[in-house]
Image (spheres, one colour):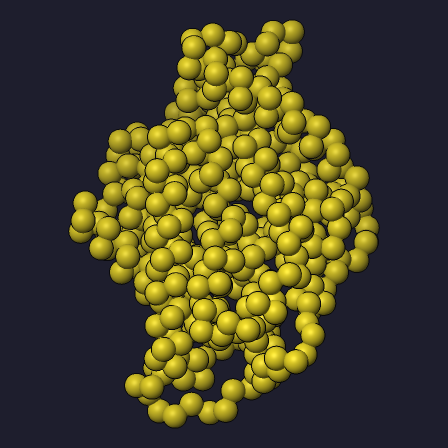
Length: 400
């Protein structure tokens, strides 16, 4: 029988480990890529519109950038008729959304994952380009799902692409309106969050060094060993991990969105202001933290209550069924469930074919703005990302 003390220990360990093993590294990557998006915002639209045949390639490159920002800003371009439907498909196939940061953070903490993490990004990019170019070559659109092999498509409701019209994609993105207590929690509490995260990052790096040299405090992020004595080094580090997770959950709750953190409003603010870029990075990382904690708890309680061990869970994650399930999870809009899938790979539970299947199938947060602007396109796009996801996963499985 599971005791209350065991449950509390699992909860505390999951909160601590999620922050020190994942969050702090994710935060550094999110801030870097958010700054790059801010620095280059609005400079690529004219180039995209002038190179229509290469748009699926450009879309895949935008999608493969970690986070959902690159994919989200492509959706208004399709709604205005500036890019092809194949561009939408290539972008959605290539994007890993915020789950990409989980993989990158895991690779930083565990260098043996660098190769697979690079490969899943390369595979997603290549499949996105090939599938997107194929969609345009066959003439597939939301109103003509079979392209030239189907009946003649009705006239598109999208506006014509006027090459003489000046357009900045940021003009099509709404802005957040300051309102209420939740807004203040995020826009005032982010400085405290970054302070704790900065300290946590320092200790997380030291833990990696200490782990390699055999020194440091009694703090094992693999096997537990909770120390809450604040007057010892190990206890202080544990409290940093717990405090960081608590602050992250507070910021996550203030966003009032369970499955996604990126919206057109948040992206619009981020592209216009360096301060908003920093705030959004805290929001994005807090979102990832919440779902990583959920993933840790799911895995730990599965082993505790279900009598499973990591070997049995890994056996399930290496089969064809795992590929189909991972692709099915990718059909769910938003990044939250996808983060659980990525975390399961980092924990050694899900096999590489399942990881690739989910990476191709998922659309991150980019499907939401497309759903609002063009419902038929978003529904067909979900199918067009699921098919290559399953096929690629099965091919990798057959290759061993």
